[in-house]
Amino acid sequence: MTSEPGRSVADCAMKCEPPHMQYCSAFAFVPESKLCLLTEAQNADFASVAPSGLVYRKSIDSDKKLVVIDGKKFQVIQHKSKGELSFARGWTQYEDGFGDETDFWIGEQS
Image (cartoon, rainbow, N blue to C red; front, top):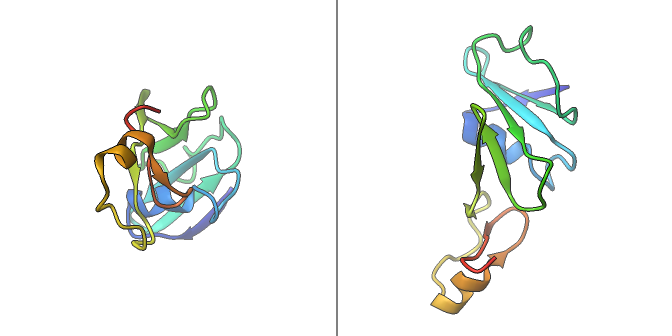
């Protein structure tokens, strides 16, 4: 498990993605210390280091962008971190999807 400075759950979620961390399976944000706790271990126990924080675990049963929060699965359809990708696109591109692993729209037909 590693720790890095973080501002929010969203900031930690971005740190748990390539290219920042290649094999991140779960993370927690500790608001008291403003730290992101990141791990490659799918079943890592955060209880001793983040007792008051929620743990966010990525799903491993799919190659799609799934995040598990409080036992519920969510598919990330838009992710924008660098701010360099323009989302001013035509409908066909929104159907097909566009971007890279850091800034993307997954696509309505995907």
